[in-house]
Image (cartoon, rainbow, N blue to C red; front, top):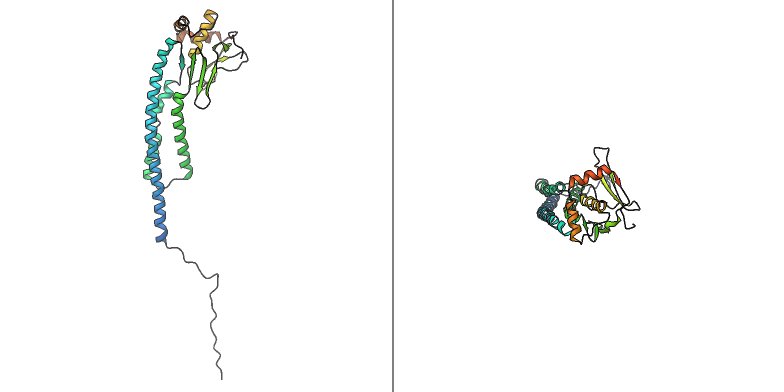
Length: 254
């Protein structure tokens, strides 16, 4: 006599086999280490950036002040240099504030978004470029001509005698400044610099052309003295504003 013994069916299947989850005690230390390394990198980066920006700001401001004083002395030699307006130059004292704020935030926050990191780095790069731009952009008038120098495009020299007309463009909008335009015979602009730069000495040189019927020879001390005698900002600017447009001045075709 045989006894039928029923064996229980296995309830195990491939879908029912679960992969054991990693222990949180193993992953958390790794995450903490990664966060600490990221935070330490941010602290180091912004600390170094703050030091570099502060030093660069001090040197830039000192160079700007020294250059302005030298520019005044060079007028006696027939060299006239226009730079960035003083107010726009002196605001660079606030430039180190940005990386210092970023440094302070990196001490407090363990995590930052990639977008914010990139945006802050780009802003810091722009501020460093602006510091470079303060002294690297200028307009120099000498016997060599009109030298317009920018940090990106370098120097572009135009003969003084290429100025054919001076046009005063009065702005009717409060947000837009009125400007003097210096044009060649082909109506090309000679002064491409923005309104943030003082182009007054171009007016003085042009006033000499109108007064004496010729362009000054800035290698001649007598002509330099005559130009400096005409150096009266209020009188010169008001003269060209009254005239609106003066043409037929060029003796060089451009």
